[in-house]
Image (tube, rainbow, N blue to C red; front, top):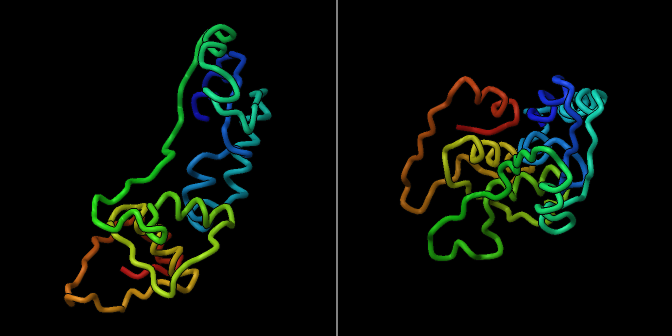
Length: 173
């Protein structure tokens, strides 16, 4: 989206092919709303659309339109597919239906499709996605940060300044 903005500012005609039914990328699908309020994301998207950027939603390159057609019909093609999938654990049992990657969990939450969650959720990881998942799970009432593990090991997560928004989301570190 940033590329479209800068190209349009320089006077180029820009067409965005978006596989989803609305724009916003990870800001809309991957981050909890309390970190990036949807009104702000939508306003930024609209500001760029108002510049004259054309959008084709629900259009998957390689399925709905071929890459060859793009190369033939446009002077230049920028591929910015973003972060589409999360990391899978390389552990026995990680393919169980109740074991999901962080991006899928957050996407389902943001799209209102988080249908099933157990009474307790374990979040493995210490990065931004893991912290967002922990905060969302806590908001949903499923995450117990005080629960003891089977081996009574303590997990310590370094808290950075950027974690302030997650604290507001109810995550415990």
